[in-house]
Image (cartoon, rainbow, N blue to C red; front, side, top):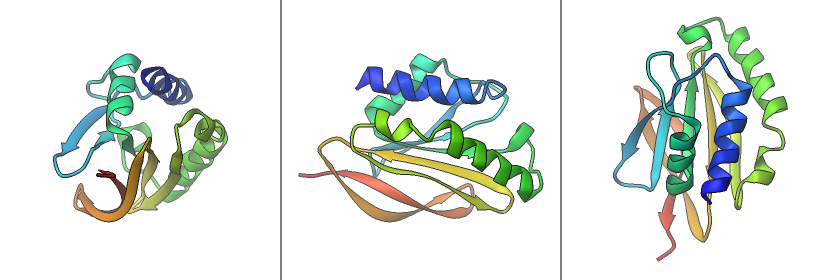
Length: 140
């Protein structure tokens, strides 16, 4: 699972070399972390991979050039995500979600994957925006 996380992290970091940053905020109620990409301080790809491998879910909130830009820029980035991450699902164990959403001129890129777990829908309040997430809970 850790090697899987490394591949995912390296794919993301290779696709976006100008964004060296991943900040995480844990949600204690579910087994997931949400990662905010910005330009202030970051994790190495191995640290990022470790979080992906252990938490099974992450959401990237991408501000092009670390600023709110016109929606067209977000759509352009989303198209790049579609192209560069098209084969990413094959790297996931039981990949469930690989999608993006544009809200208030911000691109939310969401990936959810699981291994021996049950996914349930939930609403998570993130940065004062309601973004639909697939939360991961133990099957027990």
